[in-house]
Length: 521
Image (cartoon, rainbow, N blue to C red):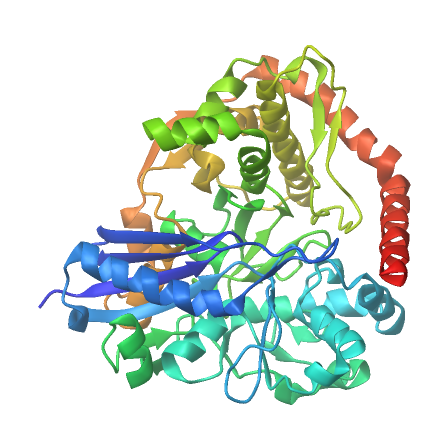
């Protein structure tokens, strides 16, 4: 009898599903965008009700496209982009909008934690910087700013945990996603430090039990079956962080393997066993051997989101052409950027449109277009933004190199804007290392389907991921371009240092203006 597996993934910009067979072949794929809600500067949220609506739609679409018998689906795994936060009441209903990873409102809570618990103590416990605004930081913001509604919160879930609840009726978290609770989460023991929880005033009862990524945590309920079309009793596994299952999809499973994504965020990840974590970067348990293996994930907050911003705000012509001719607006923007030489004729960008994560950890940083002149075109701006993401990621890569960790080359490009050969060549030249492109780019939900296969016994282990990964379009760095980019990279680094305090002053002025408007209204 045929066997099928389903992966679901929730990014910052939308939700995806992928249905595969026991040979790893993609039978169907579906995607739905959902809006990013920006109510105030520094806030970034989703409507959590859309998460389940999207799940039902993409699952039903995959079943319809593939024409498989859903009774032969052997397992499901869900992943999401972290940190995120869905607060629910006793019945599992959302309390307020959901936080996504670009939210940076809780700056006062971060400062309080640094002074009360201390950065050294938190890093020693969590392996992660508190500046990332992990979920406990946001819970403290809720407690401090919306105490009445905070009292309604029964469980603090991740997005993947929320979907797993909708599927199984059980509140759970996987240990990969749980790393993004932060502050009091012991990343080596995979549990909360209750002393720290007590010190910061959060009850351990707010948090669900944690499971290994490969564990089966429940089965599809009758109610979920009616909503999705997945038969009641279908096993659901604990799931993982989106980047980790995208690593599974690309065969990035061995120590030293490196994968890069250009999704909403720009990031790369390196697989390792050491628990001597890098202070400047995010780390979480891998989906593979999740109790003993980790992925360090240097991240710039806005990667592919920068091109989405250009598309939505500056590319009305390209969008209209897409509607008429069916040619992607992104491809048209890419063609314009290809006409521009490396270095963009003196145009330089800082990509910090929503603050910056590693290694700067600066929620006040904002985007900058530096050196703009009347000779520059839209193509210059697009390429400058591409180059800025490359510089931001290279800043992190330098730190990984200096740590002396094992690095297996080539770097594997996978999701999002990595479809752009130009962008891949820019990064190849900036990093000065060879790269390859994953042929099957179904991404995180594909890796989630493989994870479900391991969890449910369809696959004996994760060697299947290495077997299925096929790499194409190898690129070699240009020494000439790397030398040029090194000079612009030095200026890129200095530019941020020159503006660092000005970003804070800009935030102060903005907040003061908002307060005046609130008083006057």
